[in-house]
Amino acid sequence: MDFQTIRKLDGEYLAATYARYPVALVGGKNATLVDSEGKQYIDFGAGIAVNIFGANDEQWKAAVIEQLGKIQHVSNYYYAEPQVRLAQMLCERTGAKRVFFSNSGGEANECALKAARKYSFMKYGEGRSRIVSLKNSFHGRTLFTLTATGQDEFHRYFSPFVPEVAYAAPDMEEVVRAADGRACAVIIECVQGESGVSALPKAFVQALSHWCSENDVLLICDEVQCGNGRCGTLYAYEQYGITPDIVTTAKGLAGGLPIGACLFFERAENAFSAGDHGSTFGGNPVSCAAACNVIGRLTPEFLLEVQGKAAYLRAKLKNFDGVRAVTGLGMMIGLELEKDAKQVAAACLERGLLVLTAHSRLRLVPPLTISKTEMDEGLSILKEVLA
Image (cartoon, rainbow, N blue to C red; front, top):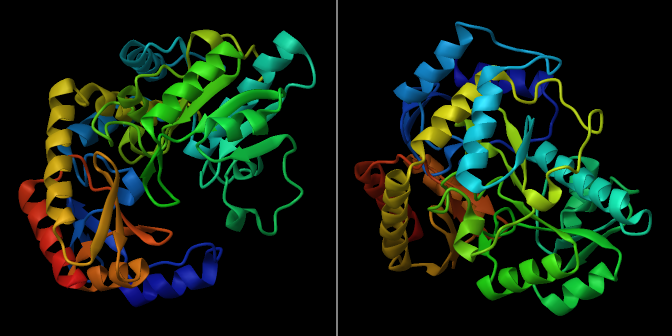
């Protein structure tokens, strides 16, 4: 099917929720993708930090195909080996006690927020259900996670919202004021991705963790975008020297298949009982087999390579004309530019480079397996556009 046919059918049959770039991607290898017309692109977007092993990874495909040859879906009325294997891997790597599987990051965050309210209700009763979220955060598209998203532009049209959600800047005085003695949880992204790829100050995160522990308020780390090796460690919170009560993850967890996970650490491990939450497709065997392959390959040695690639990219980008600042953490990179980020992204696309935007900044989240040749080719295109 040629591009014009694809575009026409999209406009005719799909809900108009996406402002798409004029490209239909059909294949590729690692960080080099191909569109329906045969044009090649260097991928600095990875499907929004999802395809962490790039396109067409042989080991990942083998894991998925092997599971497809057995059974594609198992209801959660029954046990499934890939699901328990993945849960074990996640718990052993992080210190978490239990895992709930869903299909997306928004659902993982929904689960975390529900669990926090249940935890507090069972311990303290009513009147302690408030969720504190940070300004400029993004936590999902469900009504609860949309409410917890600290950006007004996402709140248009959808009121009334879930009650008892308050917002604070990354400042302890503001957090305490927003909590007002009624908070059951504070939810943060160690690196706020959608609003500009900004890493939270380490001193604030550590102070917040201490305050939450002292006041029996659950600390939820939303690692949907910054997790799964993206920032150079398995999860970004590890670089802040804290242990959250709940961690949510999705995007890169299954390397391209839909999955979300909510990890419960010691304080929150028994928040849910049978019937409190559920998902038909959560923990799907094929997605879990893919995720087992991902987590199994995010070894300390692999993560050191990610750190090296991140350092290489950041060092190059800092010297580019038109780059005012390089933000983020690891291979989750934000670029504050002199030019309009959306215009830069469009110009990159024309020249064969896929990048993302995050408000006024450019966002770069390439596959973690990207080669030096692919990095250099992509950097060359970006440098040309910025010049």
